[in-house]
Image (cartoon, rainbow, N blue to C red; front, side, top):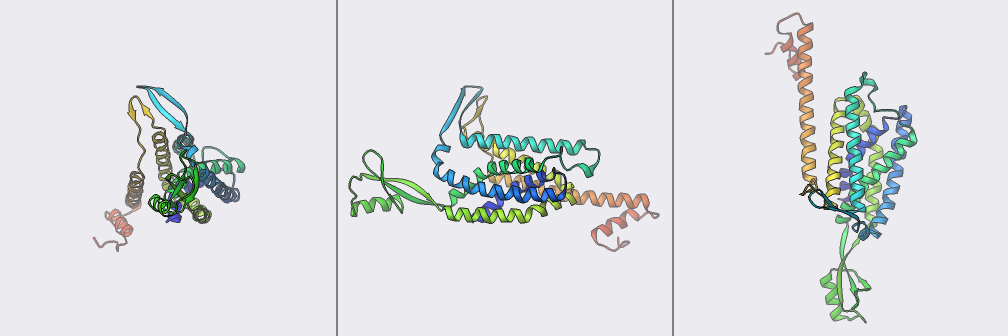
Length: 315
């Protein structure tokens, strides 16, 4: 389940890697960017996992607040700021690349809005991976958490940890009293080794798939725009999630997080619409070419039949 979660949440990351790696000079450098970028990002994701598990409470502590009632209101945590800034940067990247595709004179030179050095591309991939990591690690922690309890004294300080639910902890204290203990408080422990294995497997999958995704986008340029719009939606998802974490209100309206189910529904509709639209356009183009070049009145219909796999003249 954890590996599947990391794979699903890593798809948008893979799109960003494919788009960013295309901005370096040649294909050998692009492959180097993808492999090194993903490798370094996976190593840092594991480090980030340990930090988040240890400092989970600090991430939820407000760093500062903006309290202008009726205009902007919110309390910003470290997690909210990372998510907001990362989402905003992804939206900017997607809009910039879409604008470039519309402005470029030669389609073959539409790999990106400008050249990027190998180190520059790797750095951006690693930074964006860390932004994606916060969400995926927190989701993984929710799945890989185990209910536990702390045995506390009258001051609320932890005397010992109990491996089990708070109900089991209270029953244990009744049957086996602990000196100075007055009760139990609920807490959670996290299966960190399992999460590390899931991150490593998802990183290996990204390394194996990165070249294929990039090559697919090069050969099927009509899907490059689709990928950029999906990336744009990922940015919107992150910005709304960051705003929700900050309890952000703009002009008195509370900003709610875009649900994951809504995100995947929109992406699914976009993909299906794009596939059907491209197929229809190819059919129209085949009919148009046949009518221009054909010598018979039924040339256009014959082209449509051939596109459908039917024998020409069978209509």
